[in-house]
Image (tube, rainbow, N blue to C red; front, side, top):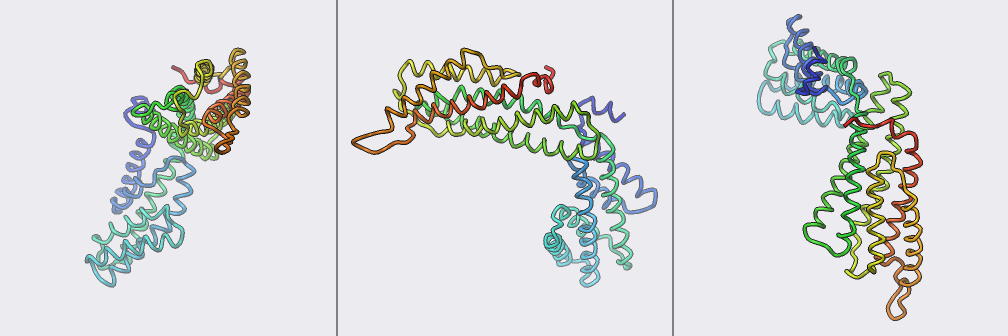
Amino acid sequence: MINALKKLNLFGGRTLKTGVSVFVTAFICLLFDLPVMFAVITAIVTIENTAADSIKKAMVRFPASAIGALLAASFYGLLGQNALTYALAAMLTIAVCHKLKLDDGILVATLTAIAMIPDFNSHYIVSFFMRLGTTSVGIIVSSLVNFFLLPPDYSKMIYQNIKNLFDEAADILEGSLPRCMNQGGEHARQMQRAYRQLTFQLEKTYQLSQFQREEWKYHRHSTKEMKAFQYAQKKLNMLQQIAYHLGNLQYVQLKENAFTNEEKKLINSIISSMAEILRTPNHEITDDHFLQIEQLDNEFWHWKEEHIEHPTKYRHHFPPQTIIIYEILCLHDVLEELQDVSKDRYQLIQIPS
């Protein structure tokens, strides 16, 4: 039934696990005639992205919840149920948990402390142990459900993100030269937004990769899956280098006639070729591209010799033209490495269309 619901794409895996955790927690509490509310609240906020996170944070949330419950019981015993009791219970729970480095349990602990105050009776010590027990049920159930039920697999999402990131990098590369050539306004803002989006998605994919590593510590995986993941990580690291050079291009401003028509034609041709290489799954570099890079490399040294010295003014170590050529050559170096890594391995992470 769980798999059937998942195939409907109506609920994600984490949503389904939250529902199951709430059901099991509520069932146990009702079976033993225990208060349901605290346990269910804890179960909802305890579901994490990975089984590893659930186990680690469960070890933090239990003592944090005990602190919250103890403080709530203490202030209720001293002050009764009033506004000051709520405020002191919340403030001290947060402060003590933070001081004890139980930050991952602050939310659960504070909710436990605040939610149990209205239901205290004259036997508030008994209420303390009862609320602590029901909170523990929520933590344990959610941790077990997160570990055994629908273990998350982020690999397909990572591989799809990497493919999309290469396409986005190609689009930004193709749009960077017109922006550098003093084409401002909306086009420049569009390129800056695209670059920010690229770096955001890159960081998100790194985070998913970390989730996947943590998940595999507790669940079995094949050698093929590991090889595909390692290959994807190498591509992701190269995307980071590509993003760095694309970022440098965002800040270069050329004058309209900075390059001759022949130089513009060569650079445009190389950029188009690079964009195509980025979009190609195996990132194969053609012989024509290598010849154009060799020609551009000669241009780099030509610009360095001709434009560094300014006898009547000052010395420019890197005029804008040289920076443009340098960044393109650096991008080519990354593409060469990318081609070498991708040989015979790109099929490992092919995404079905």
